Length: 609
View 1 (cartoon, one colour):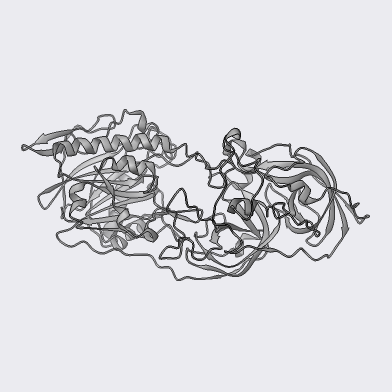
View 2 (tube, rainbow, N blue to C red; view 1 turned 180 degrees about the vertical axis):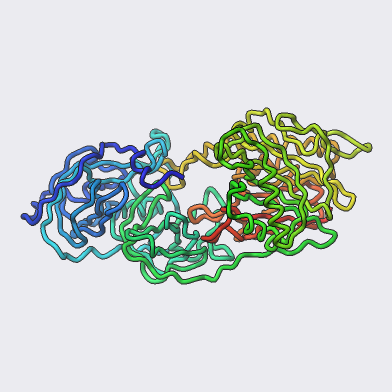
């Protein structure tokens, strides 16, 4: 993720922002016919004064930002109009450290600009600002306008209007309807002093000292206190990002399910790292929800336990091996087979042509033994250097760990980075892989700059089980849920659809040979259980995503901007699903916690082959 200070430099504005402010102290107030903040903000997302000079705009300073590349201050009109669609606050971008103080009554002359966090190509909404300002302090020590209280009653249930087709789906030209749509409501408060109270925390505090809360206590609440994202059509409207206006040293270190008790107050901002954000000059007090990491049930002697775990760019230089090992041994109860995603090569991000990952895997296996787990064996296929995406030089790939005391691996030579695995018939009507391990159609454009699926043939108690480990293309490049384009474009899913079709086609080949074959398709699918990617993977009943066996408020493996969501899945063939003799567990050890070892939660399937 780029640094926050560089984001402003990369962003574009409709009008250029370049000069510092000049300040004149104590002069006469503005005339009554002066353009006011609500005139500048207008009733749409784009100011009617964009790119125009405004003179002596009056306001009370409500907050001052003295750090980073977005230095300036917020001011608010002490005499609001009666139109709920027009904001009474605005940010004044000074570029250098502003000399005003909270409570100053000021007038500002400058250029109205529309700043797009993340740049125009991001699709983000813009922030109306006054740039290149001349600031005049009229008086000091004035009361700050009372904050607007945001709560469950004030935020509409509908998320956003449909964008204007004539404007490529943009909502910028639409008149705000703050009583109808949540995004319109938040936009109508842009730059204003706002307040929330006793808000439930729905993300762990991130490394940038930010967290997400919800002002809707009961909105799609998970069993552990988060907010579940279960549909494209039903957004979680109560979510807001919180950051501190002051020092981050005292920012609360929270987990999901905690509460930001009391009041949190500050101006409403919009940024590229989360959309609508309260920049808090007063933070509530963190109240712990007591969240604990989960432990799954140990498999019985007759059950095969298969898990998927994204270990987040693991290489030998990382300090997380013991934590990953503890999770596998204790929280996952030492599964018989573990599909690992994001195993890097032996020197990590050093881009020198190294592709071997034996040191990385060996270090993890040793840590598992040290933690009291089995001495796992493993299989994988090294990728072609820098052809599988991920961190440049890292050469991430999927790896099978397996407990050889419980399950055996059927080795068939010939599998390499460019050879496609196929399906053949053995013993009359049994399916077998032509190479094991092998990669599914690695030459296909579906896998360009992405991980190729790893297929392996295992035997448990005399029964063959085909396991296919995946790591589909990421969601990078998709427009944000808060984008100016509604509904936002999900451009990244095009490649995942092709990938899902490739995997489904391969499973069809297995089932054509052996209709009752036990097939497990698992990994980081980078898409939701209700997505078209999942539907393509499932096909015409060849596979079924077993996370759908869980109640809806327990279906999640990842937390993004306060939306608990499914990215990691285990799909099963009809023979496994048919008897219903399986258990599925999303083991929550990472996504909800600030001290996470990975950003993904592992998944475990237990079944009787």
